[in-house]
Length: 624
Image 1 (spheres, rainbow, N blue to C red):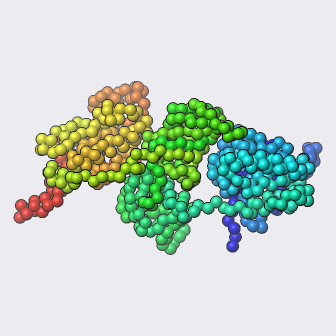
Image 2: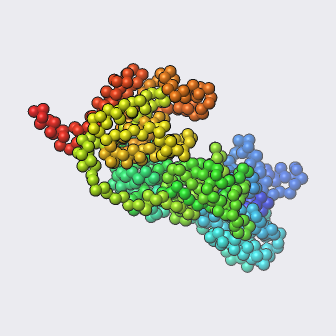
Image 3: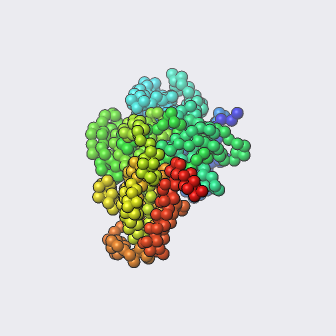
């Protein structure tokens, strides 16, 4: 049975022989194109330079730049045991971001150290990054042993130095191999110059590594990448990062907490019915009911949930020249989820030389630190030590990855440890007492469409009928409940979430809540619907932009056109009209009286007496 490909990253200080080692590996395993070595030898001769194996890499790089041969960022070779791909990771400090990217994809790593110089700062930094990125299969190669005459004492000194350092990180190298990449000693064949060394050669150690396994026995983590709607089905797609799921399993989606049962599994190029799937597989699932689920949500089993947090401590490596500072906001990406987070505290800046730490207020390029991050939105996350796939991620500033991190401590939200207590008065009892059901009437539309006018008129009309009702108006809630929020996309989303949660409480109390907010994005309204459940009614108060601008009751359009208001919905920010609202009220065609009448008709039908238990039958008997 053929062995699967192993991805390795070879890291090390820029002058410690990484390219020479790669050239040797390619040559000694017969992986170079025919004539390549001779071509490089001839080129060296013409230039009056001694042949170096590193020139092979330079030649391949030059050809790649001309689009002639292979991509040296993915270098392939094979042994008798299995195929390999070397993920290129330049060693110079300026290329550490590439090293992070390469190492994050690797199953195993070779750390190259010069026998004469030992583990310099850059070597220790690379070792720390391997630890940070969760690469647990590491071997050290002590290169240029020919320059120290394969001296055993020197080897032992370097080996002890790097073993001690890695040990403090919790990394234990599988082997520390004395080699000469230049001479090819202890790479494929063993050398007589180091008879005192009884460990594996480089190739033997590579063959002893195992592809990184994502255990199906771990808790299920199925981060959603997207939701497809090919026909009348909704297929939730993603890659299972850990655990397994089966048809019939009840899944919960973090952080919303929505539950649903798996009724089907879709697998690519798999014509037979699929009944189960496990870690490492990319699949789609269909559910027994429609729930709010989107990219970034994590499906899990009920008995093994990820943590839900607004605040967490991470161990972070900073990659860019602009320092991380307390108070700045970045985008945090874990699995497929993205959240806006603010740096609350720099707990410690770690010296990678001796692993000592000091407090600080900023983290500079190539520094490692422990940092506390806070998010307004709930984040579904695991400790990296428990589940690395959902416990490590990156920070993004604009479009640039600026740091990588491991989650080392999580402050769970209060809700995580709270058990909901049932009310003594049921929903049906409140409905019977009030003579109507509780519900959320979510009025959405452009500024000037007439939402607030309709909302207040409806509140008055229902109140005069004796209904329990209240308006949550967008402007009003920003004076109190949401006074601390701005108008960034994240703050707008949080504004809507809080209003939806508040409206739900009112509806639980049996009231008819009229929420009047522009709420321009479908995704935000979908979250509000998920919070409100079956009692949520989306009502599109529709009027075209020209009509709204003509009305301009607050003078906002005029100011937006003049450039005084940024990101104004309809002018410089989008409004996504509902695709399937429960009701559309076109205030461009209807006058206020007609619009209110249609709204009242809908409320009567959706929440009125006819919807109460026994009322429909009673009404029928009266007709008879």
